[in-house]
Image (cartoon, rainbow, N blue to C red; front, side):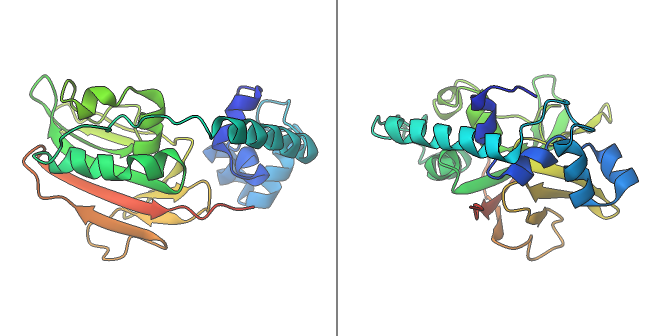
Length: 228
């Protein structure tokens, strides 16, 4: 884990910071979230140079003050000035872009379609993570198509039967007997993406799009309740 201040932006609370250093193996053996956090704080788990609560809070405060100074500088959205009226999926992403970028909303995008090799693939994508790591102007301008990758929350290639699952700065992947669950790292709410579930979870909604852009598109919106 990087120790510079910028890497702390993804953590809303000190507990989230500690949780990011707890592995699934740790939780399997410890079976106690608080104990796992304590071991990380004491340096027995994680990178070994874990920040103390006071130092974490001081650095977060510095980041907030720096962010306030930058707030007066407008940043154009990747979807700005794009006519997406003929593309329901891209329009849906554009409608959510500002809220996702400012942290008020998190979105998990389920896509099923064919890749450049003609193979059917599907996966769950953390929209916020992709926005932060990719140039979405290419997607909104039609120069590139958003397709699930092996580095996303989950990925499955129906032809090769290759599958992967990865936690992101925003969501923890939970393997359940009934399928995948995603736990929001900010408010710790769980999102159930099982299509049989009418309610995906607290502060969450399931939105299936009627579009010809992909074989199937479902967007799970989760309103983020930040902890103080």
